[in-house]
Amino acid sequence: MKKKKVFLQMLSLLLVVLLAGCSNGTKAPDAGTTDKSPATDASADSGTPASGDTYTITLSSHQSSSSVHHWTCAEFKSRVEERTNGAVTVNLFEDGQLGNERDNIEGVQMGSIQMCLADTGYVANLVNDYNILQLPFIFRDYGHLNKVLNSEIVAAMNQKMIDERGIRALSWYPDGLRDFLMNTPATDVAGFKGCKLRAMESDVIIDCIEALGAAATPIAWGEVYTSIQTNVVEGLEAAPTSLYTSKFYEVADKLVKTEHINLGVTLLMNEKFFQTLPAEYQDIIIAVMEEISVEQQKNTVQQMDEAVAKLEAEGVTVIEIDKEEFRAACEPTWGKYADAVTGGQEIIDAILAVQ
View 1 (spheres, rainbow, N blue to C red):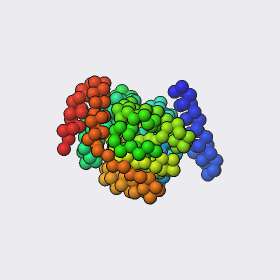
View 2 (cartoon, one colour; view 1 turned 45 degrees about the vertical axis):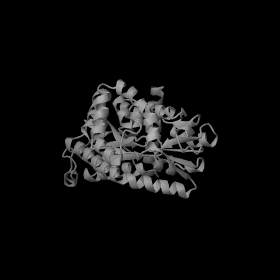
View 3 (cartoon, one colour; view 1 turned 90 degrees about the vertical axis):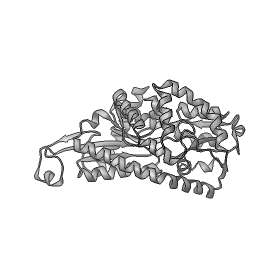
């Protein structure tokens, strides 16, 4: 199955590249290639390496080009290309052109693409330490959350993924604390009993939904709208920005403000490819994503508030709840993930101790 997904992903990428080459009359570079052409005076003046080497990165995003994550990807492309004086080209494919999130992560791991947008929900399938970052109600607020994302706690997880999976996670920022958008006016935990809700392929999220008494149904993001529309499920949980940009307000009209889980967002990079880059370009890539993550961390609260207001303007009813009741229902799930990770309880304690 994985080989088939990777083959289809590579075929899709090849078709896009060939079409791009035909449209401008020149041959487009292959993804992830290094062009070791002879040095010229022009390349030296432009700030490219004396060897004249150039590098092409394929960056794939499963998210919509109208989502808040478009800014992350577009800024990464712009800043890296500018600071390397064009020696590194980033070809950006959004809207799931090259596959869904799982496909993209597999592509990065296999090396068929160099980079992709990803979140802890899927990355935790590679290194389960990341599950602890999305335990329900583990973060007090956004200030607490951002400090943890910038901490040595997460840096250790990132290094583990490089060592075990050959994938580098650049800096992280919050996708936004998640709420439920559904057609049932659930005002307390009892209101969730028996509801059938979409869940992403994340054990933590599935366990959270089931701890509230609802039934979790894993469905790919691109199929959620139709699934709600046809009553396969009656709602989903996600960050308000994603709920709005994907127009789920057209098929569900109750926003239950639980703010139960955060998914961290990052750009993943194939480590083997990263190591082929000159040190100066490695430093630029790391620095650019650090800057973008800090900016997104600052912007998240405003983005979430604006998205909630937009959902209300579309006729969605916002329901406030008693978070302590919901935390009490979900906190028993923490032990499972503490036991599954070496030193898991210590990681949880370290997160809770961050001030």
